[in-house]
Image 1: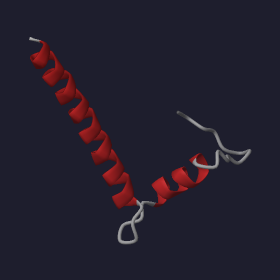
Image 2: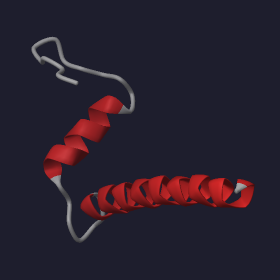
Image 3: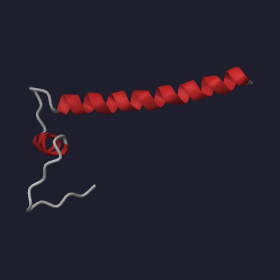
Image 4: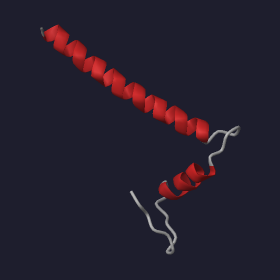
Length: 60
């Protein structure tokens, strides 16, 4: 039973990590040279340094 519980826990962790990898691959693709998502680029450019203009409203 302990091995089955560990197997389930590891399977769940694998699935979570696979979803995170897919999300990161999607972001990387959208920021690549061949396909630039300007909205995403603008979002990342503002989010990384934490800069927002005074006339902008941030919704999270």
